[in-house]
Length: 83
Image (cartoon, rainbow, N blue to C red; front, side, top):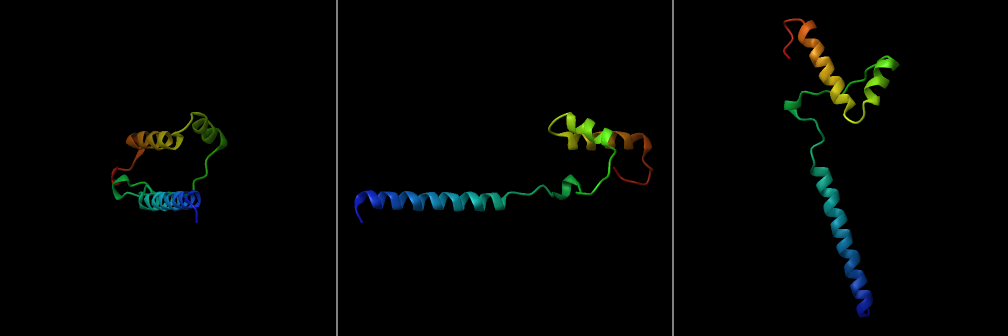
């Protein structure tokens, strides 16, 4: 193996190490299911008007929908449900 091939081989090994490290970091990252967040993924059917209005408001529309529902619950929730 000449020097150029050795450098190329070393570069490939370093690249592979970096890719493996990145993959391991992405696996170690939390996926958003924190007990303190108390958020549960569900399947929900909405009217097209409501869904399109929230989606049209841009990124974060699900968070805004959650906030709107939480606000509604302040005046409409049964008293035995903890918020």
